Amino acid sequence: MDPVYFHVDLDAFFASVEQADNPELRGKAVIIGAAPGHRGVVAACSYEARVFGVRSAMPISEAYRRCPDAVYLPVRMQRYHELSRSIMALLEEYTPKVQQISVDEASLDMTGTERLFGESENAARLIKERVKAETGLTISIGIAPNRYLAKLASEYDKPDGLFRVHRGEETVFLDSLDLSDLWGLGKKTLARLEQIGIDTVARLRSRTLESLQAEAGRAGGSYLYTIARGEDPGIYRQDRKSHSISSETTFENDTDDPEEVNRTLLELSHQVMFRVLGEGITAKTVFVKIRFADFRTTTAQRSLSAPPGSAEEIFSHVKELVNERWTGGGPLRLLGVGVSAVNDQERSSLRQGELFAGGPDDRGSGTDGKGTDTRRTRLEETVFKMRQKGNSLTKASLLNRKKRPE
Image 1 (cartoon, one colour):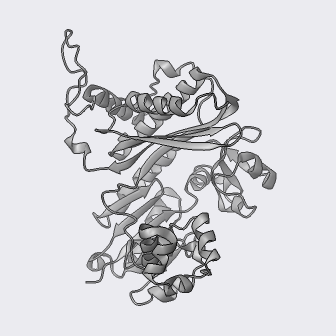
Image 2 (tube, rainbow, N blue to C red; image 1 turned 120 degrees about the vertical axis):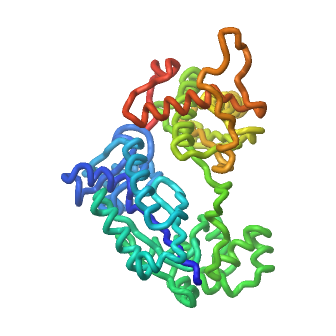
Image 3 (cartoon, rainbow, N blue to C red; image 1 turned 30 degrees about the vertical axis):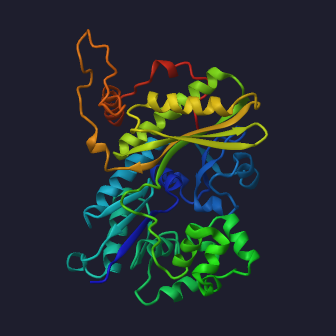
């Protein structure tokens, strides 16, 4: 039985949600992120805005210069996650093997489902129709013999696309793409390949493994050699060790106020922990991103012996990382906090203690023996569940926040 994989991509997800929730926005350029006149970047934009060259991560000032008549809206992450969860639950009705990649992408192993839903293209159309009917959103689906090709196929006919790469047609499909269309190739890699005369997928495939490893290193050369042949390099392994969750903010004004920096780090830590709990995963690496007023950017990370069990635990580590690198380096423009090396298998091993374990004489740390604060973890989980139900809870240390992250 030949393997069949779907890659499901929600088209211009954040902007499409806003257009679905407010029909007056349909057909208009919609830009999600900071407001014009404020510092920050584009989080997402509609296809109508992309016509003007607006792209995600573009400074909002540049987006406004290109598209001043767009509708500018703030990020509503809770709403996006709500719809994302609904769509992922819908996908699980078609196969139990759904691997969510991000808030707007998923990889499905559809092998052996033909007897239930007919040919793969028919199953894909059923999924697209249901998502449209139940949420008002369009999705693009790529179908292929492996996850990597399915990912590329999902981008082939966007938006509202459906494209299949049949077994035996991998090379023909790849050669119809630009080299920059291959997932995982950044600007530096593409520039290096061009320097050595590789500007098409076919030319990349003509090179030997040894020559590519000589140019890009052992791992990098192997990756290039593999994807040029349409083979899956393992981009979506089930252990998800390469996945990361992060949140960042650009300050309204450059700041060198340690108190404001710490408040920002704490709130970002809460945002990250909220997503960690929402996705039911854990991670043993925390990291920070620091951008100075002169746009110098640095990152730092720390590997932990056990997954952090609370936002405060994340905060304690990222605060130290920032203090190690922010030593008279001038005002800060941006801060980011994240966790990586995510593993969704370890969470079940955390000891599920009482929310407020121990009596009045308990002065212990409440850890599980591995450094994980189970009481804080349970508290975080309770707060998360209450916020899911619409209750608004705010840490006292965040109440005097000068500016909320965008």
